[in-house]
Picture 1 (cartoon, rainbow, N blue to C red):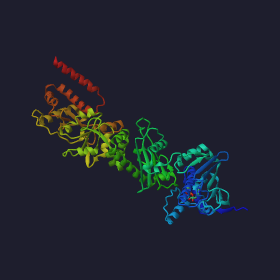
Picture 2 (picture 1 turned 30 degrees about the vertical axis):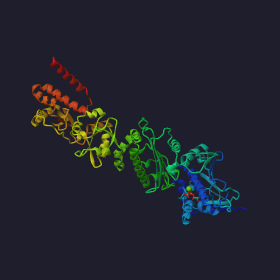
Picture 3 (picture 1 turned 60 degrees about the vertical axis):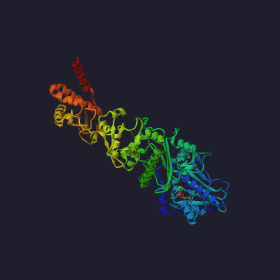
Picture 4 (picture 1 turned 90 degrees about the vertical axis):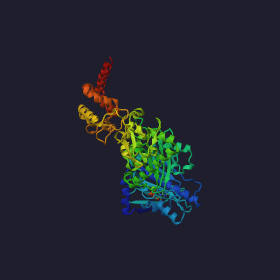
Length: 614
Ligand code: ADP
Ligand code: MG
């Protein structure tokens, strides 16, 4: 007696089905992810029912998922020993698109006031139909966990109708046989299918066997509570997802419920590959929803400057069945990004207090990224500012301070945060720009990274204090009355003469109130620039306008005093000395491009000095 019954899909259902098949998903391969997710849900429901003491058919069979490929017959079969379906459920769940049996299951639990701690993936009721992207025909055989319900089969080509028949003698669970279209026969190749399972479904919490072999050996530890995970498990997990055998420098494992449900496990690799000249790194953080991969290396998950991270972000709030493109513009992604980035910065800040050594290791390796963040990411600028570390005049070489510590040490009369940019500690300490600060006992940060000046420029303020380059600071030494210093008139007279001789590149020559040991210093006439910034712009081939300097001279310095006298006594010598003073000052500022003229002049000055000794 044939029990075959033919059912028509309703017209609008057929339309919806066409959308699923032709445009919802970008990659055909995700049909495997969807069928495995359904199988996992069926296993999870079974486990849940069993745990609540329900009688189940064939209770000795453990929930698991088995996949078989046959490249001769061009089929792939996904079998699970989960809850299965009754005839009514078959019609309801597979005959009605956009009806999720899983969602209904949870709803029913809630209505019965049972705690729904069954962790189900499905909720949209479209995943199953993704099989029709690649299928000529799909055959489902299923038998419910309820002992008195017989099995059934369901068959459809995804066009117009499906058929239901009896299949009384099968075991509990569901078997889905996909007969592949000729164009899609690659999904019947074991190697191809294995790669897809590993990619999307590796962390599904039930064993997945492919042609008899277990494929998912590493478990989703991010979803477990921190204190029950052994170091060894973290190590194994990191090696698996990070493809890295060196222990990571840092690890953040956290979960949050609000504003979004997130479980995340992030690692800082031991090596910054961008330092090794390997080009730009790509974040290797995969985005999951309930342990199923949604987007590998999810681009929008972090700001660009966190591209060195590896790990996993799992959020239940993500729509699993929405294709990736639409995923990326979603405001949900932005929210996730903000929450995780904020949390990660908090982790670094806490680490810097709890384990400064470890933090410093991370800082040494990844400081460029944090600085890139200060420059490019307004949202997190203040939090990033707290993480910056610099050498400073009050600490020994090699030791670094945070801005927070610097501010705490500031003298009462000091209103701003100062820094000197120099290539080394030694040049910073002997820099003419540093003299006045040293004499006043003001702390000055020594920054050596050409980026730092831009970083300071963008940070601009820290804890309400303005950050200022020493060379642009308005600072005066508390000058002791020096009777022998040049008078204001003498300085003006000398300054005029010097400017005439130095020509175009000088805006004005004036008395300096900041110099102690140096005769002269150059300051960019455009107060928004520093020498280093000009150099950077030049290196980037950017026009920074004609360079004009103010030359500040020290009226207390022997060279300046003598120069004033010499300009009438020996004008040629005075001219050479003036040119040399200007070059020396430019050299101290690090802006001499071509030293040849300087060296020739210096040699002739030396000759003159020696000649006079004769
Ligand atoms: P979703 O998973 O979002 O609910 P699907 O279209 O993937 O939507 O599946 C529809 C419904 O079919 C599921 O909710 C479930 O009730 C049922 N179903 C699908 N696959 C299985 C299976 N392997 N075992 C038991 N029920 C299944
Ligand atoms: Mg599903």
